[in-house]
Image (cartoon, rainbow, N blue to C red; front, side, top):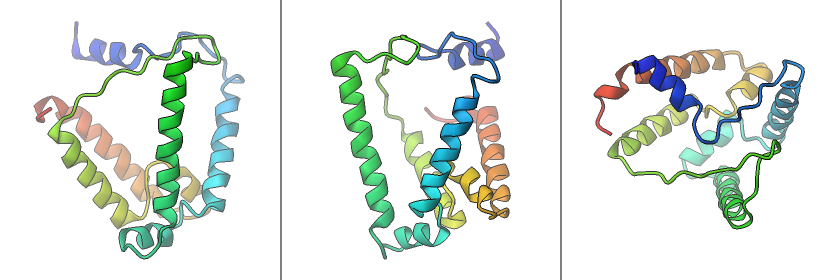
Length: 159
């Protein structure tokens, strides 16, 4: 099996939906994305100043948001496991165990430094661009380039 075939197999893992959706059916993702973008703007999650306050330990705002997200995630995963919750398509949700790698520390540090320098986390990049902060396009292109470079060299990195 070639490396490309392995990538395709990995992208269609256990939790990948096998239902093909039309372009119109994908409209729901656009609507949810716009909703989350509005929430990010109103909650000031995309604010460069809020992010800088967080990294300078001047405000609890972002730590509170991140902490709430972690708690909601923990509770959600426990509920999914306990009640065997299925997707909207009726497919089983399987949560695979994660293994620790020291590369996660290096990656996390690089991610954090990039976040602190640019004032932009990958999640709200599009919301920042949508608010008119077009300079964030540089951050978006850099994130895409970094992901591409990682894909090229990942087999040579310690895992």
